[in-house]
Length: 206
Image (cartoon, rainbow, N blue to C red; front, side, top):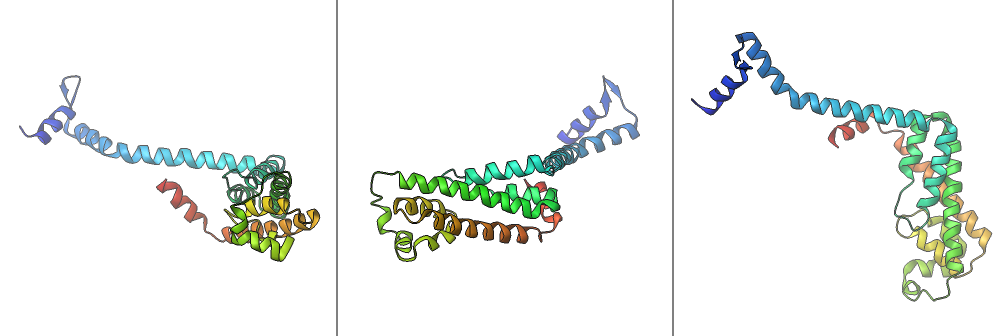
């Protein structure tokens, strides 16, 4: 007896008793559908979790505080991004578009201010950074350079170096806020044009 015949023979029995032909075919069909059922069940669980999260973030008290905390933390030297949180809250509640952008800007600017004072309180000279391009930008353009404080990788060091150079504090805060607000406005506006089907497709992949 071949392996396939042996498996078919074993699957066509229940507790040692042979199954009728229709029941055996149904049993085989169910076994072949199990992987698909498990995958669909996992996708449904993820969809329900995302719906619950969006419903929670749609509440202003929850969504705005979440955005503020994440935005403030992401502007420090912690390696996290705030754009997903901002987009999630706006997607959950479109009426919060402008409040979310303003709160995210405030939180991210606050994080930049923390970086500024870290640099201002530093006693050692940033010997390595003195030769970098953005150090030259700060010396040449002053506080205006902090319009680039939103850039990943160099934005946080710019704020720290601005503090170390003791550039005018309130000018730095204003330019930080302008740059960060324009960044949130542009990123969120562009993401809103992405069809929902694209996010569902990504969810099925991962």
